[in-house]
Image (cartoon, rainbow over all chains, first blue to last red; front, side, top):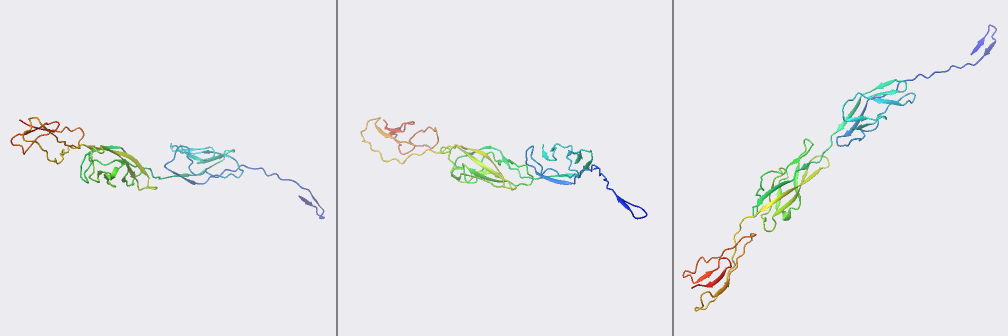
Length: 81
Length: 190
């Protein structure tokens, strides 16, 4: 910060502006996985689902699927029931 | 699918799971049949039913083969219908009363998967004629006593447990000789 009078004399001083982090939402995009019909319970349905979060936060997974074929793990991994 | 971070901020997206069709192996059922010995080539086993198979995959076509214990190639199976018939006219109850053949069914799907089962085929006995060897000449003195023993004729029969009965059918119009019906022993008559 700098101050100047009408005779062009100046003074300067520093000051800090602190930027407060605001939590931003994680992002998940549409994804596709495949699994063969001949597989036992616990078989992984492709790789774990992926997401991103600006803060690197961990996330909780949930879905609205109510069928009995698939299970969703804490890490976003879908398996066969 | 929804992810929620520690600050309760969320994001949602649709997840698609493709279930990939896989080929299942066919299975076939054991079956029992019978057929008369001495049956001709292409004779059908009884009952005249095909081997049966199941395959979970729709659209698979099945192909049948006899893969083991079809001794001497006696039988054949229709690759398309699964019906078993005689391949060689060599069936002989006395030599081999039963076959237990391993049957394979193969599908047309990925990997050409197979299933196996057994066809038990009982060879039924058919009565076969006895045989009598050509006899050499026998000699007897004209003054031989009644009851003089000329010897026995010995017939044979391929059937298990058949009892043979002997008799003189011709050439002895004066009844000069007698044959024992059970032993075949020929003796001078009165």
